[in-house]
Length: 210
Image (cartoon, rainbow, N blue to C red; front, side, top):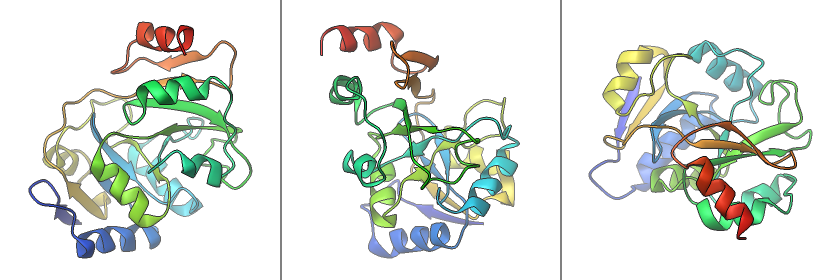
């Protein structure tokens, strides 16, 4: 396991290249979001996705959410954007909101847990954005912990929790904790699947006042 420190200096090309090499090679990284640390892998590599599930001891019936670098990524991968997407994106992206949307067959079945939808998040963390942009891919962004345990808010906690199972840890310093709010916008009305940093009331207000 390697550790790359991005907490005290600007992004360096050689560091981003090292991160990209791990992702392209099917490896797993841990990186900070604006809430907690997450596990990142190439979502189009079924073996890497399987490794994330195994590492977290996550039930295969639960799909993984993805971090994107910009909204255009959704169009590039032909994600279905219902009308309700736009007011939520204007209000909460970049930020800790994950929206579940229908996707095509270009995403592996195990990533989607056999379904037809995935959760997407445009994080306000510059580290998230830069890694995804530099790799030219969305990244898996499930929490960097064993399923059912508390979220990790530092690189040191990630290392203690998951040990040498991770190929590379991006140390971006301490994060505030918590998790993204997950909203299924394939449904009408949209349904909150997980409460998080963004309140249910804030979601309702954004939908009522687009």
